[in-house]
Image 1 (tube, rainbow, N blue to C red):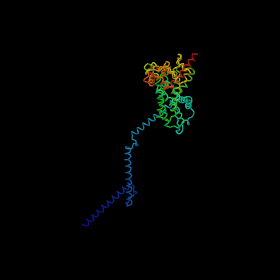
Image 2: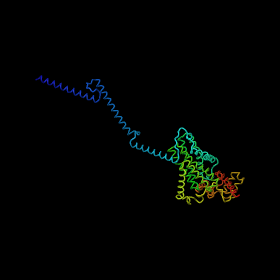
Image 3: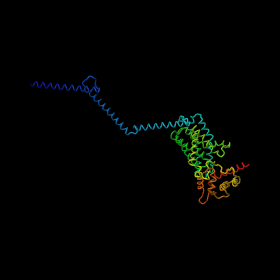
Image 4: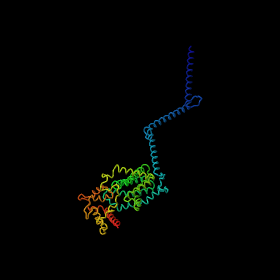
Length: 464
């Protein structure tokens, strides 16, 4: 009985050990099969195999940890790094790209309509060296040689000898006309320099600054003038607003565009091309009394065609009609509230020489301008001019009405006459004294003395 119990106990122990060993081998074989460490044949793992197995397991754990860390860092950068774009930012970028494409499309359409060539230039060389002979380049050099060279010479003459005497009665007017002439001459030279030089953004900025000053002087001159405004003011305003738009387009959209610079050059040339356009009208005695108005319109039409092709004259004509409707029906420039009694009417022509009368004979005071004895001294010439303006011999002062009768026929508005009179009139005197006229206005009496002598000579020639 005891033997049987012992044998039974031994049998149970052996059976348990066998089951445990069988289950352990099955687990090892399944694990090795999943991880692909050993071959398909189940073998008992030794110490080297176990070391290699656990090393591979550690590598797998490290790879998984690094992958999870990179995912966390990527998700963190998506929130913290501004360079990582979210979906709303991508939508904004798409919208901005579409706006850029739309802007480029609009610019291309405008360029085609205006006849701009849109050639591609090498930024390392001047545009002049890359251009071939074409109608636009020939027009550029023609205007430079025949018109703007005269403008530069006129600028030098104005700096040395002065301008029309009507501007010297007011500080604002004389400064504005000086800047208008001198800055305009510099602008012409600067644009030729830009065309002959390697493109630079600094050159473009300098051009826009010069043209902006020129636009301000145009506005001041136009605002303080009277006489034949419906056409000339429309042309001046057309040039002003067109140049403002071209300045913005040049600075913002295409700072190195030759066509835009040429357009500014041609539109600015309308002011100097007026003299060339007026020469045949004057020689052929056309448009009597309206030669300057016809010359301004002709010059602006020609230069707008150079700048904008076929749309240039059409746009000028539409602008002129629109401005005429506004001036006559909205602003009502012919009314007494706008044009005062002493001022030159809008449908009349301003006189460059206010003493050159067509019907009336020169007065005895004006005939003193032909006296050689008086013309030899500065005080004698000033005294002749002063007496003619004051309308009496040995006058002591010039009143406001007499100054208006001198300046208004030359196209000066009455408000500017009043400002000029206030600047020159002393508190103690009732008007402009002869001493002030002699010392502060030398250009006035020098120019007007020559005008008087010319008017007397012209009248005597017509009377023969």
